[in-house]
Length: 96
Image 1 (cartoon, rainbow, N blue to C red):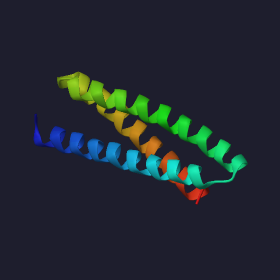
Image 2 (tube, one colour):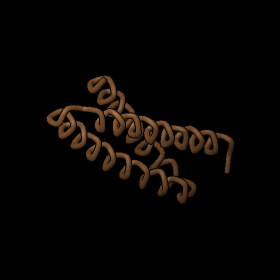
Image 3 (cartoon, rainbow, N blue to C red):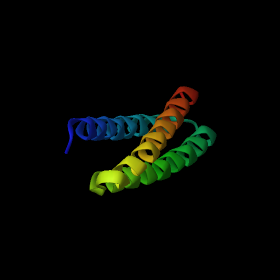
């Protein structure tokens, strides 16, 4: 695996861990929230978990890809993780 590819994979793996930590923070906030807020927050968490799972699937495909396929999948995987990261950040800020 080239250094560039390894660096990219390491970066995306770090984003996976960060998204997981932020989702755990949202879950903790949901446990402490009032009933109405808890329902909304749990819905948002389910949405984010689904998006995280989709992005994680893309990352798995990227890890298994070679050559030109890797180049094609790289941008999509990075975009998916950027979108997820932004959505998790927005949710974390919204439900503080």
